Each structure stands twice: as structure tokens, then as C-alpha cells.
Length: 175
Image (cartoon, rainbow, N blue to C red; front, top):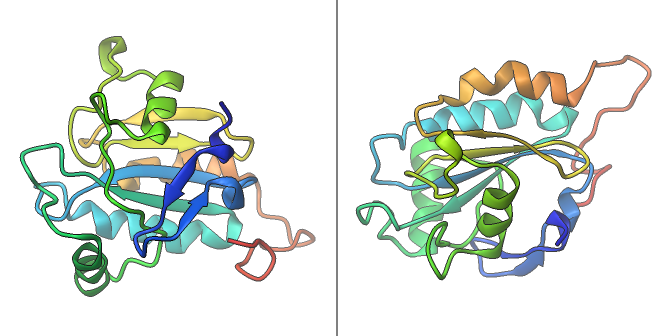
């Protein structure tokens, strides 16, 4: 299985694949709007805005598997994220991250990078997977890792900023 071939559904219901994100550094996060870690949306958005022109994309996947902390439908989730945290990074339809109905993306991510003590299961909302530009899962972080702690690692993965290299923008990379 190749990461970029995995089918996903946007928060607006459009079926797509991760292929448009090829060549980008990805921070994939299972999110929820009624969780003690929900304020991490602000940090995720800050990373996205700081690094998007260099090639970072944060991808949010709402999940309701942990104490019913994402009970809303996709339209409500989108509105909440927009109004409360001014989220501009791509959001997707709700998914299961564990169990027999775990989304293929999360099956893949957990197979590539185990959690603490070698576990595969996602322990809670706001678990984070960091993927390099070639699709390798290079990091897995718990809900206790604030997005700001990933800044240096993301900067390293994006590489040096060069005055002679064009910035990646929405107009140069089709999303």
C-alpha cells in the first residue's frame, strides 16, 4: 500500500486520495471538538500558517471513538473549527482510528510507526503522525505533545529556505 493511494473523504463529502499531497510534509492528526486537547487546534493552525508556503500540510481527521468527544456531523465540525479556531488546513470526514472499522489511512499509519511501548492503537484524540516529503512516516506523537514541540522537526523536514528556490504555494502545487 502507498500512502498517496489511500482514499479519503473531505469534510464536505468529496471523495479523493492523498495523492495531491505528494511532495509535501504532512502532519496527520485525529481531532475532536469536545476534548481537553481541543485547544491544540490553535497550535496546529499556527504550524500550518507558518510552514504552508514551504510545503507543510496539516490534515485533520475528526474521530468520535474516545468518550464521544466528536459527536457533531461534518458540517458542524467544519463550522466549529472555522469559527472557534479559524482553521484553514484541510479537514476530512469523521473516521475510526482503532478497531475493525479503522480507516485505511490509520491502519497504514499505525503499521508504519508504533506508539509508546510498541503499541499500535491510538490512545486518544490529537495523536499526530509526521510524514516526510517522500511519504515516509517519520514520527508519531501523543496527545500530550503540543503542536509547537514539532516546529523544529517540521522545519528540518522542510529543509533550508533558499532565496533561489520558489516557494510552494497553492498556485504551484495542486491540492
